[in-house]
Image 1: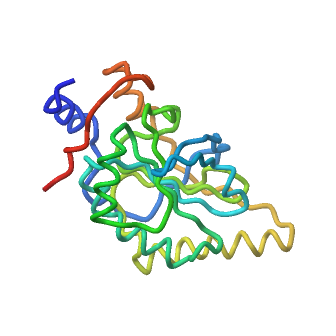
Image 2: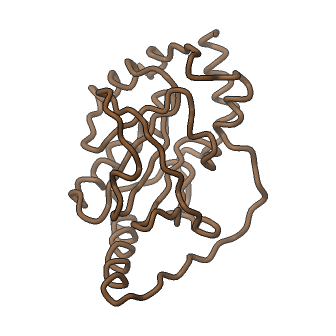
Length: 216
């Protein structure tokens, strides 16, 4: 596959703004998040179920995505702000190139887990551009979503997420039923993963060297 063609196609398909407005948008119906098992950068399997009982901030990103790279330090600051109490951050790298991911993380180290979706096995998730981040509650339901870069360590974002964690903990103690966030229903669009997989016909056996796609 031509590296230039790959980069050009990604530029067309990935339409996320450099900095999206607002915090996070409610997910319609708060559906159950599908479990998965992926390898981390050290080859160890990890699943969504490993984090049961906590809020999970699940970030889909890639080394070739400039907004993804830019928001990583802020996301790491957020992870450290919670210190594993109530909320965990997980990054899922979209596509192959473990070497490229390790190269990036050497320059921009993070303390949260990075998993590799080399063959885009999570194409069923509603990812329409990168970065895309989902908030999953302790019951395993998708409750909020953010498409595009965010200031994850801003006071407003930290307050928003901490209020959700505190409210859930209080309701768990009292037995209250959590309210579903109000949503604005939008027309269905083909996912970002689906566009790429359909175009390339990627499978787990395909090769795509993206090691050198990092910005200098």
